[in-house]
Length: 143
Image (tube, rainbow, N blue to C red; front, side, top):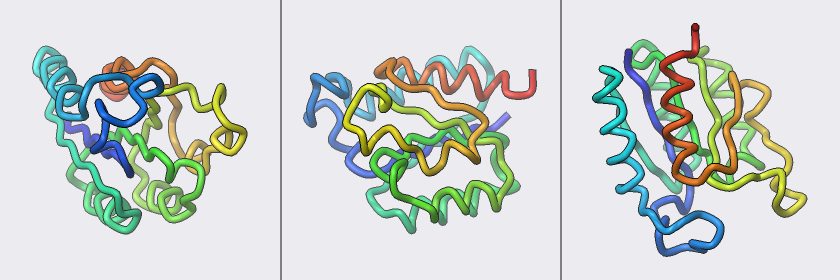
């Protein structure tokens, strides 16, 4: 099984940006935790982060035929990107939406996810653990 983890805008600033909301771990430290767990589960993973909506769309397009599941933290694009929604729908790869913070307990504009309707499910509010839960969900997506 191959799982693609995609990370949207500003997640490259994790550990420095609003640690009271997003935690103190860097994206690289979160990736290390996910890599360790994926080795235990004997699954292949790949990570990408981009601040560019178009680059994320391209990564979703290129995932078709190469990855079995996408785990996506679209960050701010969650609330605005019809392009990401359309890309997820177009490739037909099961996608799991994840968030570090509970988007439903934050500002009103964060309550709406443009991508939720084309994702298999959503994991939000568990900090870095959201990534590990996303990995577990991906591995068991057909179970």
